[in-house]
Every structure is written in C-alpha cells, then in structure tokens.
Image 1: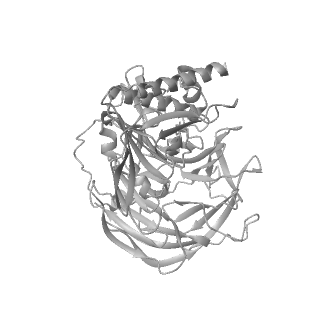
Image 2: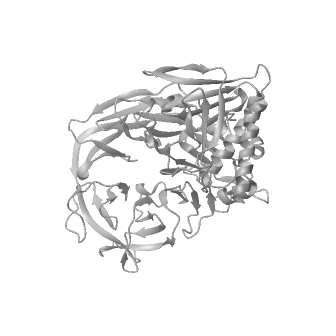
Image 3: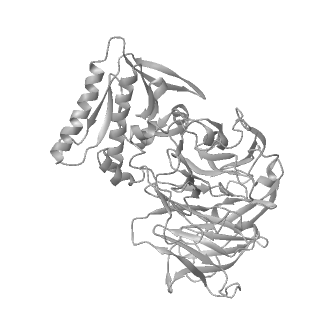
Length: 558
C-alpha cells in the first residue's frame, strides 16, 4: 500500500510539473521577492520563468512523506506547512509565501496552470499537516466527517468562497479608517517592565508588573486610561505550599464588582490567590482540590462576560485535560473559610485534549482552544461534553474570545486568527447555535485573519497574540473591532467588514482570508492590546484601544 501511495504521489507531482513544462507559448510563471526598506519596501522580479516543483524529503525512506517546495533559479526551498503562510489569490493568479526569512510571490498568467498548482499545493499541505493523503477518507480522518467535504476540497470551497458570513444591516455603516490616532500616552518612571493590562469596566484598570506589583490606572471616557500614580504590591503570604520566592501572576481576573482579584502563578498551579484591590493585599489563598486531591489549574475565566462587574463567586478553571467550575462560597452561600476552593462540576479527560485557553459569552457559553488547534464549544449548562468541535489546522490556539451574544468566536494562533460564526440553520430550517446544539458542517466557512506577507516580513515573523473582540456587556449592541498584537505592532480588523466581505483570497485548506486591517507600530514590542469597555467609548464606532509596551502605555482611537 505504501508503495502505491508513493507512486500516486509521484504521479501527481509529475502531472503538475509536466503541465508547467508543457505550458503554452506566452504562458509564464514569474517569481518576485519582497525587499524591505525601513517602513516601506518593494517587490523585485527574480525571474520571468520560474520552475516550481514539489519534492518528498523522505522519498528514500519508509517514513511518511515530507513535502517541500523549491523553485529552480532561486533560493526558495521551503517545507509546505503553516509556517510558510501560503496565500492564494485565484483572480490574480498569485501565490505568496515565506521562505528562508524572505517573502516571495509567484505570478501565474494561466488560469488552469494556477489551479493545477494550487490543488497540488493544497494536497501537500494537507499531507504534511495531518499525515494522510488528501482524499475523502484522508480528510475524514484528519478533519472529521463534518469538514471532510469543505476544507482542502477545491469543489467544496469554490461554492462558498464568495459567500459573506453575515449580511444583516448596512455593511457600509462603519468605515475602516486609514489609521488610528494616538490620543495620549505616558511612560513608566521605573525600570520594571509592564507584563500586561488588566482592564476594568468601572473606575480603574491596572498595569501588571513583575513581582506582584500593580499600577492603578483611571478609565477616562473617550480618552483611554491615565496613570493615577498609585500602586500596590501583592505578596503570597504564609499559606501552606505557597512559594515565597516569586509572585508574578500568570493569570489575573477582576472579580466581585472589581473590588477583588483572583490570581494564578506558574510556580504554584494548585493554588488560587484572592486579593482585595482596595487594600492591596492578598486576603485568602486556596487549594484547587477534587476529592481531597490537589489538582493543577493553568487558566481561569469568568462564568460569563459581565461577571467581574457583579458579585458572582463562581468561575471556570482549565488545565491540559480538565475543564471545571469552582466556587469561592459554600453550598449555603457563605464565603468559604476553608483553605480549599469548592469544586462544582466539570470533566477530567484521560488524555489528548491539551487545552490551552478559554473564554465565555454573556450567557455563559464556553469556548476552549487546544494545542492541536481544535476549538470546542460548550453550553452554559454542562461542561462534560462539547456541543460542537471545529478541527485544528496544524497550529496551537493560544487565546480565544467570544462575542457577548455568543454568535461569534475568534481564535488566535501564531500565524493567523480564525473567526467562526456559531449560528446556523438546522435541518428544520430554524436558527440554531453551535454552543447549544451540534453544528456539524452546516455553518458558514470560517474566515482567517492574516497579516499581509509584507507586514509579516516587517514584524520579523513575530507571532500574533491575544486576539479579542471589542468589549461590550449588554444585549442589543454589537462588537465592532478585533485587536491583536504582533511584535511591536497592534493590529485591528473592522469586524463588520470581516463578517460581510466576500473574500477572494484563500489560505490554509482553501479558507477565505481577510488581510484588511489597521496596523500601528511602536518602538518596543507590544505586551498587550485591549479595548476599553464600551461605556468609555466616544460612540458606537469608537475603537478605543489601550496598547502597552514594556515601558509605555498608548491610548488609540479613530
């Protein structure tokens, strides 16, 4: 069977190479290289007669194929995978990708030749990512039956690529500005680097620094945040098992009307620290336990998107193979005086889930991202089984967010962000939600948000991080923007345009791809970029963003 597969693969390569070799007179493949020059750059022609070909680096072994793309007469020799960031533009016969630290583009002036190359590229990308040949059976194994006929299948993609995800309302109501304006900024007076921003929806937000220090910020309507010149230092206390060598939190949640903080540290994954921000002290430290056994938790999230603004005592916890709910109160509703936080519900998976991150909607729907790229949707009533599972694409999901109404999810990976519409029409013609019922293959095709290859080059290939929607906590309004950081840049997408656009550009698996955004550069790497709560925005269109580098804070808006 292995010999037959190798023969089939070789025949596919020969077919494409044969088509390229036998291209009609006047048909050519041009190869360009992007040459950066400061904040600008230009595409330079390398050759008018490029000869791309795929080869199997493990052809002479019994191991699974490992496909590479090389272009004769150039330095291009790159593994066909997510890191190469292949972007296909069928209307213009263009393929753009990264190789050897440079950005390249091939321009094919024959439609059939371009499609033949794109199909073969898709096949090689699938095989390198999932370990199976790109057949119906292989896609079923790699993607699951629900997506086998949609992703990596040219027939499945071509019927949907021009469909917008959402066409409700006036799609031109909100335009995308050319840039965001810097409303104000301030620099930190000390040498302690900023590690993150903890945004509040009431009066204050916070800068998190090493060693448990928090600087207090004032939220300003239409103006971002201001430094209040007040700070406090949290120390772990004398709780049994707590480390006293360092207290740099890995996760912080404002809680209980934003008067308290719940904190995790990487050194003590079995402990939850509970702080009073008004006194600037840790008032309790609890053990995470189930059946009297300590368990590690690496991520915590609110029960719902507005929970930090009320007195909710429950919250969610996540570890690699565990999703559960905890409560800081006893069954009688009193604050526990025990050293153990109360376990409420959840599920311990035996192995294989490799959870990384989670987020919740206004109704308490839970989205979880995993190391293998899988996105799972859980209802608010049960954490024991995901209602919908969206297959991974070869890249770990490092953060997730969900809109307040639970209709949209954004998942961040190093190379791209994926936007998923969770509502769909079920078999009875009624509107349904993938958080409540299995969505299967009935939903809209996900969209990928990527940086343009030229911008990827300028960022030095730094990863995208912490993608999130603009922040609302009430029904009847909609999120307007999506923000992420990438190296020394903050990147903002117009969410209305993402939903309504009919994308012609394709990338991984033939998924429609959006590269229309606003990018803002700073001198230092951005450590966090977060939206202010909508109550502090000037109007519904305002993209009020707080951007923090290691030593400065910038307030941006449009």
